[in-house]
Length: 543
Image (tube, rainbow, N blue to C red; front, side, top):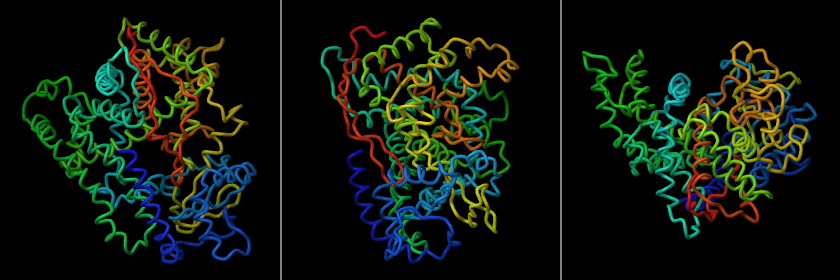
């Protein structure tokens, strides 16, 4: 599947090369011009230099974003990052606090997603992205119920790995990391999203994974086409999206209708009517929320299903990328086996501290694993530019350094640069898995020693150490975003990733790698190796 996607990307790139040249002339006057700001990759006196700069950015994105950071951002200057589809104003990272504090009516965080994903074509019901009420369910229900979900998720992780990686304690086995991890992530996530037995329905999982792969590919191609022909082109370019949406909904419909009948029954409490432990899942919370929504369309089974599909879209790729990266980072590290030993010991200690039962509290004390995930994500964050916003003010907006951003323009910061800056991260190019746990485990104020909420709020030591966690965001670390629009599902994802890595380490042996398989830049996204394999063997005595 991943090899097919890469071939498909090459085909799409060829189409894009032709379409973007046409699109440049169709769209160049559709927005207010970006003037007075230096364009990256242009050459003075060069014929068609703006158009050519767009292709240079595609071919050499890493060098381009690094130049934006070193030459402009660190000098408190803005610049324009050209792409085949558009152009983005990159602000200095010192502007991040100002940027995230702007209201949605001034700088929108939603509109860039709508445009970049071309949701009017890639989603059957685009308003689920424009009106993401499922984010409220993530914040109020999913995050709050992580404790009760920990055991069933680990149960699903164990079943998935045993099936995909096997239980042979004698023979070493080659496994494709990306493909198998994506399957485990899909099953584990859907254990929390739709429960048993649907989380093991392979057709449902295939539609969820297929949709997660089809949307960005279709969006990239559609973005390059002139707006006037997108509706026609989308009828075939986005066909896989619609196929997966229909297939996912068809499988989910009987369960949605069953639960709706129980919820709509006139007598008895919901809990007693359901009488099903597996109803502690996102589907159930979504139904309850939609039932009380003044917009009755939200209670429609197709809408419920597509919101769950959108949730899968967000969860599957991000967690698959993160876990794939950390596996390769650990196995290619100089002290690989020592790192694995320390992480195994920490995982075993966390589990045994509660009589062999995995708990949210135990996972929260796994500072070394938390640090390894944060460090790997720092190096492998798939976003070259981050905190993207769209200017919504009709007359434009002027930034603190005097840059005028016209109405409709996109602005962002060069995230890849700050995440690899030695001023923030000594030996920034080196994967140091315990970079962030050293201080959290050092003498002084330990996070667990601060008992009261008041102490937690006012203890500088606690706050400083807590800000080094995987899920904490800052101007110098924002793979999850930063501020009120930071990814609401990151707490769930962090627990899921720790459970996955713990199960792998406690139940499998790994051969170290001589060198790390290379991640690749596809447009402005850094994608982990999709076809690389590792050698694993089931431990004779699982911990």
